[in-house]
Image (cartoon, rainbow, N blue to C red; front, side, top):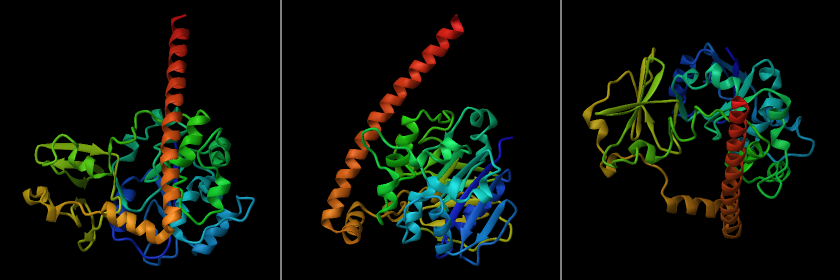
Length: 339
């Protein structure tokens, strides 16, 4: 079995979702999680290993693998540095076949159902989003963040010298570098299925009156409706606001409904109420714009919108090129087989 180690730096206050994350991480007992944190309430638990450190100490570990002065002023900016973790945290990750990173506002299903040995054997990277992503532990992948784009995208110097967040761990950053440099992604784990992320997944698009809840039991995660149940790799809370019920001593099930994470409770008919008062609550578009305006100012916000549009177009272009190369390789392999 291919070994997997996942690094999770997190500083400040223990998130409300942590107990749910912890229960589902422990259930994936063949994967090791390393939490770099200053939060005293977070403890070792079986395959969860706590590395007690300050944010400044974590920053120093990352600085050691970058040959210029980095700008890392707040924990939120750590997301941009995730592609460096294979080098920055090599003392903990060096002996694993794959290393990775993940969020703490997620719950996992049975990850080995998706990250099978057959999948990992032919993969350099699994999943492109930052919610959870695996990287093959070799020199090429560990240094992928340093690779340059040919004609666009973001390069690590400008990202790591800026206090702004560029989502460098996702599509507009290392994902395009991976596509350009022939990185093999695991095809059996698609980008938007099987995970729950945005509202459209909870409704599955076929009928917006069918709201799905998230339910975890016996190590497996599901999106559940009274007449349908779909198994998931993971679910991401995506800035949704939740309260959490008191944690039971032994967690054998987790239910996530609009506004509440509860433990050891069954799904009820009222959980599927899709009224406005009970819908999944997230920041509105207006709230997001106001927040960005306050954070960046008008000029920088406009500049970042332009950058986002350019990045999106660039990613689409690279996707098409990558798809064309993949099809050509497949045809070539088929031709060789026929010979």
